[in-house]
Length: 266
Image (cartoon, rainbow, N blue to C red; front, side, top):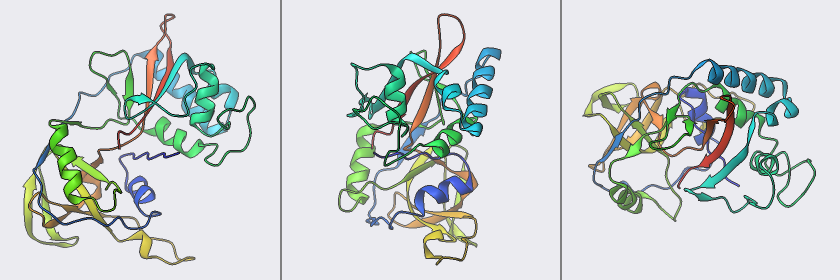
């Protein structure tokens, strides 16, 4: 089961990218990928109370307190379709527990799993303040990610730059940023805004550090420009494009519940 959660911090970006082997990426030109970003969601008092209870339950590793916040119609999707492990014949709590590693799929009791329990992943969701309401939907999901202006162009770009059918990590930025030739500066590699680009490498590279030495915080990300060249940008200027998100919805009683787990399309 794949869980790829990125939150807007240097540590989170490094945690996601560093443990995996470097992805082979073709430095080929591709059409610029434009994105739109939804307006941030402004929650009410009930929403804030739910988020506070969620964070407290995760901090205490209080499973009973956590599942009390799960909606009876909790859904689990991957790429917009029901996850292969989502069991529509069983209740919401079963599916929530399987999704986050508290229970094996097909089992009726909680216990050790290959992936969990995913307390760290839930803590990332609880801590991330970026939330947006899905267009035409009661769901409020976070972390916020951008919407592709042209999905077909994005898929074509992925085909051009990915190697061995292994998707590359993509980031985006909204405000205009200037990419540089090296992580420490150098000449401008171009200015971009409301654009997504694939990640080439990190600086300093955590994967290059041998235990017991501790890696230094990642300060810059190398990106593949549409021209096929590369440029560097400070990590705090970018956000992940392809992420897993947790979604919330207001119940008939006007309280908020955890209503869905939406895994990335790719």
